[in-house]
Length: 422
Image (cartoon, rainbow, N blue to C red; front, side):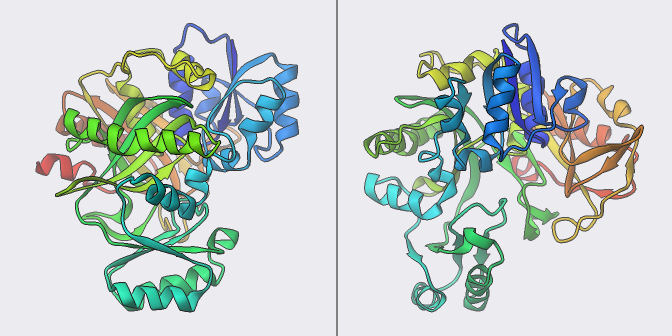
């Protein structure tokens, strides 16, 4: 089977590695891909927003399946257009992808289906939003309703911060994504990410992970797309995972079906685990980044048939098989990230890192300049290691990262601290 992978980041590189290992695969294409993906797949210069061009490519290259990595093409309805053209694709429909595309939509679904989450209200203007924030008090969470590349959420510790966030969002910081604001109560507890594969009727648990969103060590500084992650999340015991499936995933599946938007694809459940158990922070309609980089090395079965079964509404009854080891990934980012990342520096020595046992380096923001590998993004590389436990994986990942020669990069040195502190 020929497969087309949509995307160009570290998540897509991790997906490409897993797909490449499948006996079902004949040829793997990636659009647009990146230099790392290009070592194991054929990169194709396609605009992911040009659905017609993608469909034409699929028909011209006998593509039997399309795997969509990032959220924007899902929210834009790429799965719908591929389905209409007779090309099977992994991911939710446009209407189902609203679970990520509109935070207000998701909060309303939670209220309707009694899914545990923070109390909230939605606003289309700044002054009523500020009045509500003052009524609820700080800390409080202010969110742009639409897609904002993981940066549209402000956890305001004071009312002044909340009001500034409201003004920023309504002032156009996130464009159309900020036409509406969701304000919700602050939740206390431990964050975790949980993933389930869904086929429109049912869902099966996939894996768990914990991310490090803040740019600075000790979880300080501005939010980012993620500075590192590890899997599994220690707090996600078998009992807690079952509660998430029963209390959050199952009612979501039923609620979406009742709305005429059956959910297929991967459901990324952002959680806060507190004294009363799991509560939903947000849904994402795709695999996480950098969570995918630590979940897929733990997979002990073929990924491609699972994704195909999800798309075709035929997920197996058996649970997903995972290796007992832990995986940890470190994001190697460009200096200045997330505000103003420096681009253009040459990166050397990736082959030295990848020569270490159990280590994989995935590209997230790179390009080739002749025969030189150049930094071309904020989050540039992911260095991932598989180990007997989080401490072992952490040691291997940092030792490998230190073999990469890139003066323009930086990383957090405490990835995995929460797991180790337990």
